[in-house]
Image (cartoon, rainbow, N blue to C red):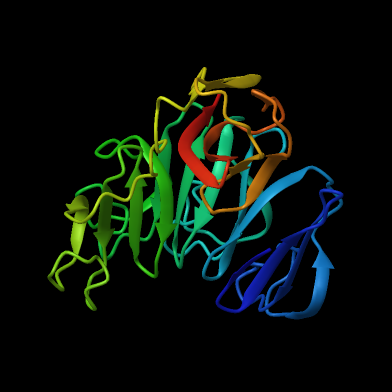
Length: 281
């Protein structure tokens, strides 16, 4: 489910795409405009939709083949098709088949490819594209002045990210101090916010548990130097959702079915919880 302003998107478990709400700009993707839908209405017949993101008056989605699709309001290039022409049906963007993540705000998008690169495009009046300019971009543009992004969160016209080193970076609109840098001035380049490190707590005692290999592709192992009993192992994504759980005293865990990315792992043993980051290749 993804909701923004006056329309909503949803995926069913069978891979079909549904939308409802306002349709003034074609954001429902059903080939019409100006006709709202008051109940969930299927978009097309495809059954391979993977993820969705509702923008202000536009929509974005990924399919299982790694392609990127957008539709709706394109006044500021948020659809990323090289034009500023609205689209009333899902429209494939480019030829790349390695899109892994998409996030939409009011008039911009941030996407990630499976090679770890991050891309941004759309409205840039307040510098929310972070490229050092205030010029709109109507095609996905690689983010080159800040790398190793771990967590991405988009506001109205500003962005907040946490890098893999735990540092916090912000850019864009700042009229209400939402960037947290002690001013109300906009910035069109990422700036580091000097605050307590936001990284994940390391293992409480590396001499008790360690995990290897890290990164890993299939199996991760727990090195249990003090022969502690493992009650439970939980892996969550960066949003805190549990994606894998194991309730036994095993010293290994199969992570083959997890998608590539960064996860948090918790090893619960004898009343204590040992935490660390885990990277899935």
